[in-house]
Length: 193
Image 1 (cartoon, rainbow, N blue to C red):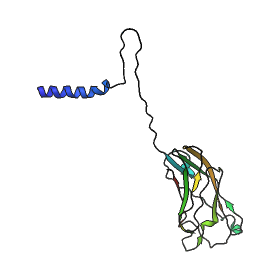
Image 2 (cartoon, one colour):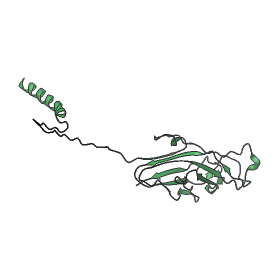
Image 3 (cartoon, rainbow, N blue to C red):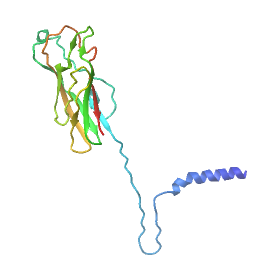
Image 4 (cartoon, one colour):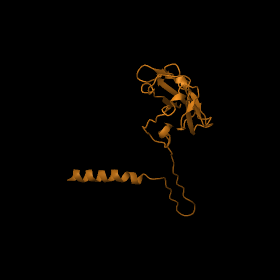
């Protein structure tokens, strides 16, 4: 019985202890003032966000992979005529809070149509609506990542949005097919110290 009472008392004291450990206090009797201090902390994690296409809309993970399509079905006589074709603008957002951010683009090889025909990545370029958020060049020599570009902000906090417009040079007549059924994906990577 004594052990049970002791255990209950110990438990009650342990639960009440956080209530006793509150902010500083000072009791003054008579004239004068009383002082109590309170410390504050704001904890901010390191954040890095890259959104390209649909994923640029909100600062959240979005697994949608958009497709940029250059379709010559309606204008077959334009194939290979040397007149570049532009895509619709693709929204992009880069957000980070720890300094300079670099962007790279990577592929796993030339665009193919599944039957061995290819279109090199040199045929596709991108321009940005904002100089401070340039599109990195798509690597032209097969696999791997291309040269990095720097996203500028002037401070350690970067929050840049832009539209990237892709262009297909259309400088050669190629065999029929849907190119990009193999090796049609570009992976963009943001890096921050």
